[in-house]
Image (cartoon, rainbow, N blue to C red; front, side):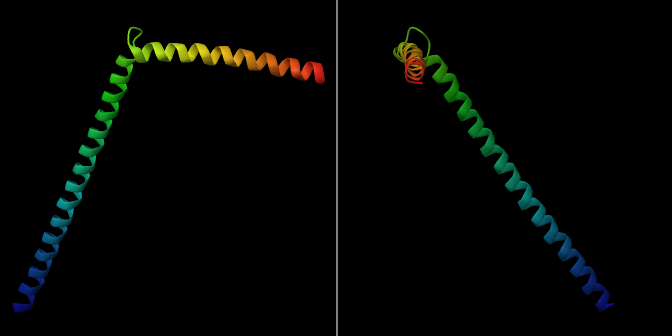
Length: 90
């Protein structure tokens, strides 16, 4: 009878250990999910606020519009410059 009790105790101990491992794993997964949700919400908030700052009436919005205009202007200049430098020297 003593051997049977020891075997049952070992099985019970193993079941308890597995339950503890399962609970730790689930807690870790839950923490990871919550952290990921928090990071996602922070990125969404930042993108939303950046969009609000780029509205045409704001300082950053005007700067963005001027920078786009300047980039388009410079690209037009460089494309023509490269074309004519190759056409005249080529």
